[in-house]
Image 1 (tube, rainbow, N blue to C red):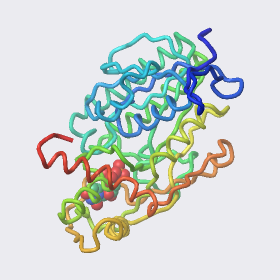
Image 2 (tube, rainbow, N blue to C red):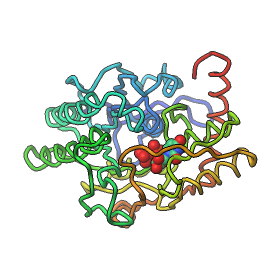
Image 3 (tube, protein in one colour):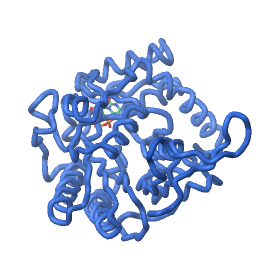
Image 4 (cartoon, rainbow, N blue to C red):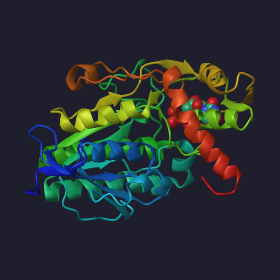
Amino acid sequence: HTQDFFVSTKPAHGKVGRVPVGIGRRRMRIVVTGGAGFVGSHLVDKLIGRGDEVIVIDNFFTGRKENVVHLFGNPRFELIRHDVVEPVLLEVDQIYHLACPASPVHYKYNPVKTIKTNVMGTLNMLGLAKRVGARFLLTSTSEVYGDPLQHPQKETYWGNVNPIGERSCYDEGKRTAETLTMDYHRGASVEVRIARIFNTYGPRMCLDDGRVVSNFVAQAIRKQPMTVYGDGKQTRSFQYVSDLVDGLVALMEGEHIGPFNLGNPGEFTMLELAEVVKDTIDPSASIEYKPNTADDPHMRKPDISKAKELLNWEPKIPLREGLPLMVNDFRNRILNQDEGKGA
Ligand code: UDP
């Protein structure tokens, strides 16, 4: 594209000026599928913030206009209600492909739709990348490792996935999406990047998406018991959303295809997580045990040495620092919801 190399900004002295977008970098046009979702909207903020043009595609199944409403009116921002299962044609330089429900509750709600999103949605966006010569980044998942028999998980591990289970629409769907991405790379020379994202939390997570961090935080705020599934000894490693967004951009801008694990190696049992939420929100919060869901991975922790070495990336925010950063956002939205204004 030959669009102009400059962004209009208001410099400190108050005059509108024309400044380069970074040193030697031109403004890009970038599409973010799922850009009205939790991770997507934080990514969009970063891309807009550094001076690029962003087109968000979202069908609002789990995404929310509220997550991007602060960008309405910005001439470098566009929002399209569109489902990636249908093709779309846009002239862009980069495609961040995030669209897919990611919480087990949401992706199991309509499993056929979930696998269609992963397979047809990814196929459509790869087709677009090929046609317009854009660089394509797939957000895959730690779920490709299934219930892992290696710990921590390295990118070289092929996983232990049930192909016919309740989670398959998501984990097999993402595995197929990785396959498609590599086939478009090898067969059609599309420039691709693959991120395997581990559990992530932060402001703008759906309040009621059933994930453990959002559940515990919302429950503690509402003075309800925190629901621990199973014996609570299963582990996860929780990454703050800004660390993930930094990793996604480093991957897109870098020279390496991946796959790269993007996660925080700090590993917690669900009972330990409940303790952190108690310390952060309400020391009197209690716990209630509930049966666990099918095929729940027993442990999960990323080995991030590859991303450290090749992307020069590692997470900066430990759980005890990140959790307080989402509490205000949750409090406000819960207050609005309880007052009947919707969240
Ligand atoms: N979990 C829990 N209580 C909840 C929700 C989830 O104990 O209210 C557990 C769940 O059984 C799993 C872990 O927390 O072992 C992480 O679940 P989540 O749905 O957040 O994400 P997953 O890593 O399974 O995709």
